Image 1: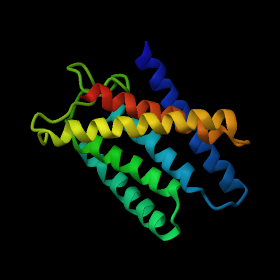
Image 2: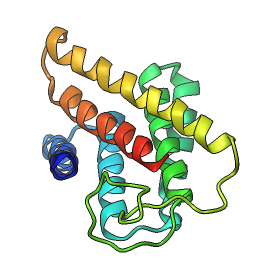
Image 3: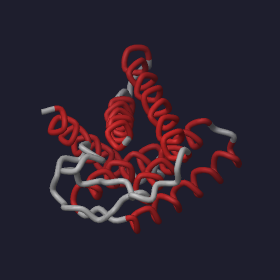
Image 4: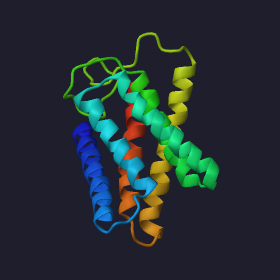
Length: 176
């Protein structure tokens, strides 16, 4: 049941990020890096569900480089946060093996899942890095949850961030 709820939440968050970009385009506004990163994150999680492949790490590596460059240039934490998220997606995609598509998005790593870590994982570095990313995603979800209570509108970005960060933390946890 939790897997279906998480899957639905990821799909809703992805649709919300896409809608925000569409509305901004209609208003002829420049797209916000947050909406782009959230859309990519959601699409990546959906891709893990439909067509898992380690090759899908490439767009996230490009996104991480772009966001990392912008973070260094502008000295902003938001760019850095989303660059870390993109690198987490690279890590998940790179460790993927081809598996049966159609399993719930967030049941990763078990014998019946859509995402499986390669049998030749890089030793102790994988669990340590995975646990670090779990902690980071859980903290990001917690901060997004507090933003829902204390931040002035728009809170929709915080809700999307909460859904995607919680799903990422859950995916990493199940992959271990």
